[in-house]
Amino acid sequence: MEPGPLDAGLARRLGELRGERGWSLDELSRRSGVSRSTLSRLERGELSPTATLLGRLCTVYGRTMSRLLMEVEAEPVMFVPVDKQPVWRDEAAGFVRRSVSPPHAGLRAEVIESTLEAGASLAYEHAPVPGVEQHIWVLEGTVEITVDGNAYRVGRGDSLRFRLHGPSHFHCPGPERVRYALVIVLP
Image 1: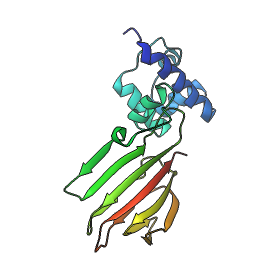
Image 2: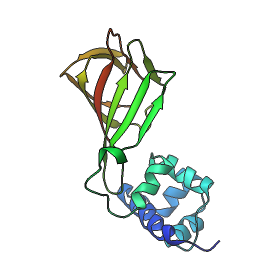
Image 3: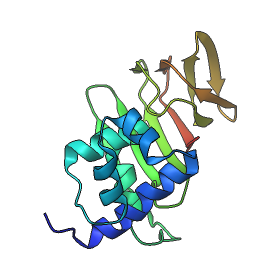
C-alpha cells in the first residue's frame, strides 16, 4: 500500500519515540514482535502501517492510538473555545468528562473537568499508561479517591497528586455532586 500524507508524520514520530527510549531497531523488534525490516521501512515512510501494527507499537510505547495520531497533527491550537472542548457523558454512571485542553502533538499534559453525581463511583483496573502523573483539584463538593490502596477524602479547594501505576477508584459520597479539574501528564 502506498503511504499517504499522514504517514510521513507518523513515520517521523515513531522514529522519535524509539530514539527517546534509546532503542535500536532490533530492540524495538524484540519488544513489539514486528520484524526489524518492517520497522525500518515504517520509520522511513516507505510503508503505510496497518491498525494491528500501530496497535502493537502503541502498546510498546504506552500510548493510545488516538494520542499517537494526534501527536502527528500540525502544531496544537493555542486557544480552545468552550464549544470546541469535547464532552463525554456516561449518564448511567453519573459521570461527565469535558476535555478542556485535549491531548495534542508535542504536549505531554491535558486538562479535564470531571463531574460525578452524588453516590456515583468510577473504578479503573489499570493505569492507562503506567506512571502517568495526575493532579486533581476539587472545585465543588467532595470526592473519595483510592490510589495504591490508600484512600483520600478530597474536598473543595483541596488537591491530590500522584503517579498512577495500578487501579484507582473515585467515589462521590454526596450529598451534592463533585466537580474537579484533572491534569494528566504523561511520563
